[in-house]
Length: 196
Image (tube, rainbow, N blue to C red; front, side, top):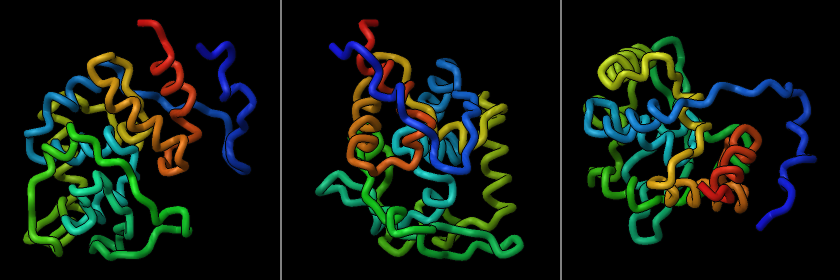
């Protein structure tokens, strides 16, 4: 048992404040998990199980899903030129990374043409307005109206049935693979090492 939190002396990266973002409630997390089969539900489901950024998820193609090794290869991100989607490499070399593909996520990602984008219109990445409309329809249908993709991605689980997801996120943190290290580390540790 850990006596003190290893995050006690961690400081946020230079230039970032100490303000904590709101995490989704247990009900919101449950709604995301339950609504995976709604249109665009897989998007929120992927964010919650991987912690990847909004535009990293939008940049995923089926060829980036390595089912054999249980990895998601983050190789590119989508950015928007006006309304049109364009691709670029992540901001830094650390942005090109692998994220653990958990079984609960792997079983929900359908097989597809390797060159097609997972979140697409006719195989192409969504435009800014298409993404905004899809997210708005999803949040209204699932009952998570107050959530943004950023809030969803930075939320570790709080319930025991999702402990597999917590362990996956925790493993990513330890490996330096998860982009939401500073915002979620303490919450994830509290969950994993709690007695409840």
